[in-house]
Picture 1 (cartoon, one colour):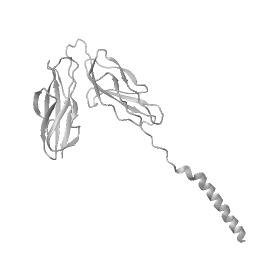
Picture 2 (picture 1 turned 45 degrees about the vertical axis):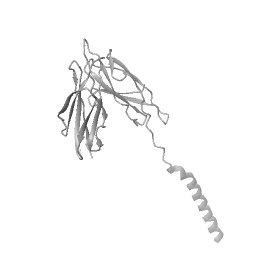
Picture 3 (picture 1 turned 90 degrees about the vertical axis):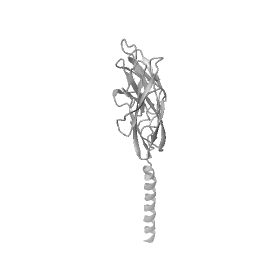
Picture 4 (picture 1 turned 90 degrees about the horizontal axis):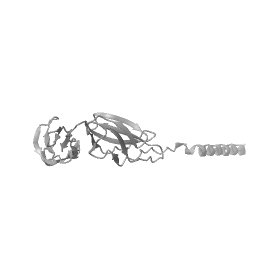
Length: 233
């Protein structure tokens, strides 16, 4: 009787070992999906380009998927640098697409790459271009591009240097800037006719500030800037 008990115990032990061996690898989680690489270069239209033809073939560098899958691209074209006034948004499978846009308008664009699981890369920096209007002699300058401080940034109290970049497709145009600054979301005019692209302001601890830069060319054409903000703490 004792031998039979030992045999039964050994048999059960062998079965348990076999079952454990067969099922032991089932708990391994699949590796997490990685997003595709970001597009490194917006090739055409290049930055601040005046496009003679409004039927534009957008071109950018290829992205790759770490898992070897296919990559798609989402192109976003807007009428403002913050890309909120969207003119066109498309998802394509190639690194170029032809789009017809309105003439005589400043546009801003960027690209995001996506994989088969719709994981997204970081967007490219936003780039500006202008479509030439019919019979236009002077083009409105681009809206000012933010340099520093970053939008929604926290900064040290005291002197804060506001910095931006301006651009115009009209060669030889002299640009000036009107700076709006204050604690109101619609900031008042602080300085006008600036010929430099930076200005020092004083910031008090615990205060949020809003600022905007309008760009004016020497023909009086004006582009209204975006409102940015930062907090001193």
